[in-house]
Image (cartoon, rainbow, N blue to C red; front, side, top):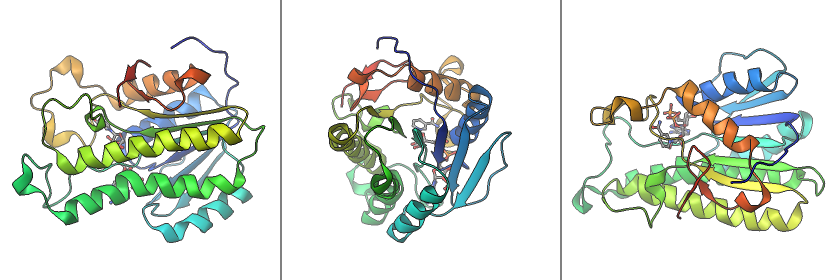
Amino acid sequence: MQQAKNTPPETILVAGASGGLATALVEKLSRRFPRARLLTISRTGIASPAGRHSHHSVDLSNPETITDVTEWLRYESLPNWVIHCSGILHWPNHLPEKNLQQCKDEALLRSIAVNVLSHLHLAQALAPLLQKRSPLTWASLSAKVGSIEDNHLGGWYSYRMSKAALNMLVRNLSIEWGRKLDCCRVVAVHPGTTDTALSKPFQQNIPVDKLYSPAQSADRIVSVLEQLCDADTGKLLFWDGSQIPW
Ligand SMILES: NC(=O)c1ccc[n+]([C@@H]2O[C@H](COP(=O)([O-])OP(=O)(O)OC[C@H]3O[C@@H](n4cnc5c(N)ncnc54)[C@H](OP(=O)(O)O)[C@@H]3O)[C@@H](O)[C@H]2O)c1
């Protein structure tokens, strides 16, 4: 990834804002870009960061929120950066599947609702507001395990399948918006294994130096986004900015 001089964002939107990585990102972004307006979306309220901040409580996995989010953004302001953090791996009564026999429609459908549809709906809410000359950086937090080429272990069916679908959504968005906007970078980012509620049940076998703090991962994600260049759009990126095959 080549170094590019990018204009600092004036307005940043973080969605799925109550989670471990999102909380650290909001903190990091408010320090890194103290003049930027920070918009957050979550199913719940969040602690307000320092600086100019506005919060909207909706569940983006519900398609009925699309118009509502469009109107909220129209009233607030058009973001130059969007970081969508929503994602789900496990919940009460569901752990990632180890084999085919453990797969259940319900788990896959729930994974798709959060890991894919919440990202699709936010893109649909933003789309009517996009302006040709207003630069846009969109990052969906995805996962390396959503890479088809990189999958040598199997298992984790619902998570892998839904993240692979998210990756395709990101690729499609990069093409569609790339045609419409003068400056548009749409990427999926793998944050690395980070110590949050999502990874908690799977941390035992992770070497200490491979389990990152949310603050560390947030720093890296922001650095990756700051250094994005035109050639990066439509890619799945590792936390150091290198490319992961789809
Ligand atoms: N932690 C890791 O090791 C790791 C590794 C690879 C990729 N990732 C990805 O990074 C992203 C952030 O993960 P995290 O570690 O910060 O996890 P987290 O703390 O569990 O946060 C996940 C976020 O997803 C949203 N979410 C969870 N369940 C939902 C549901 N049923 N309906 C709608 N939204 C729901 C929540 O947003 P609300 O604010 O709306 O509640 C929550 O803030 C995810 O996309 C994850 O797949 C994480």
